[in-house]
Length: 181
Image (cartoon, rainbow, N blue to C red; front, side):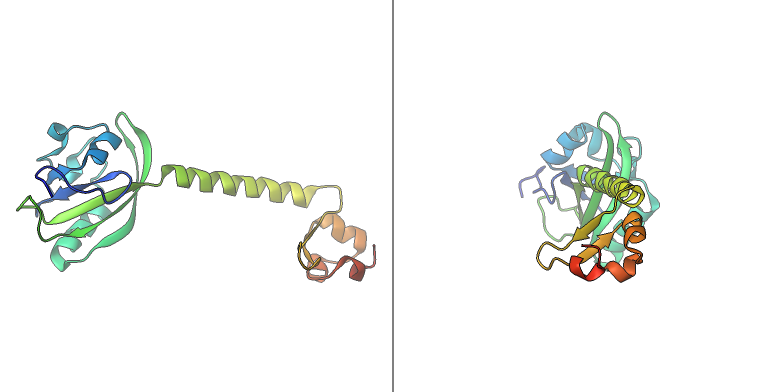
């Protein structure tokens, strides 16, 4: 690694920390993603960056454990508002390192932005809830069939009333078996 440069560990970049959890350097992706400069970042404690978004006790414990027990960590979520950037949901990962161009560097911490993925998951859940409500409250009998076997995989309450069977009795049957068709 060249001095002042570290390879990115994730889509949002990475930082190198010393034993006191002070930022030694960050990669260009980190600076660009969080709209900060090296002057605003390097030499500061990780928990003091920005408006202290990285000061959570859980993250500090992970970093201290990584130092003390030479253990890495993955999938730690940080959900914060970043100045000039807005709300981001970050997945943080990192651990001890041995040799870099920075002799004081002992930890590397990478960041992946999961904001868009989380928003998509939330939108999907919302859509599924709306669909389920519409399906269950429809005043038409609705059956959902498996495309390959022709067996019933779901039925709404109105259909149960039409055929006089409960959902559990409908599931797995073919249309000719429920006596209505």
